[in-house]
Length: 110
Image (cartoon, rainbow, N blue to C red):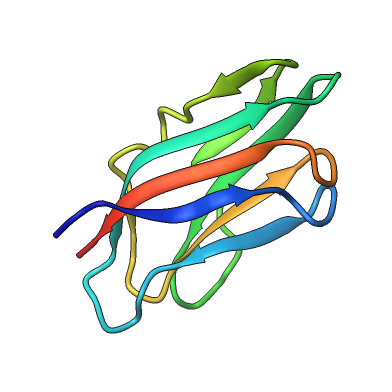
């Protein structure tokens, strides 16, 4: 299967809140994350965490622990690359500010 954009230029709508950014199709075999970017075009440093939830939505530990992205830089989230979001599961992000970091994620739906 071909890679596709899972999250396209999305920013957090609420600070310090775990938000759902992508839902893996429930009728598939999960989604593999191929690339992840959190970029910071603001004037100050911002932080984020990323999570992979299963279909039950029960709270889990972060796959990308708290990461600071300084202004005019990006972070590629190496600990989430090649991870599988289970069928019906979600990719969720928590960010330190509203409309701060910009997220772009690509992957392959299995």
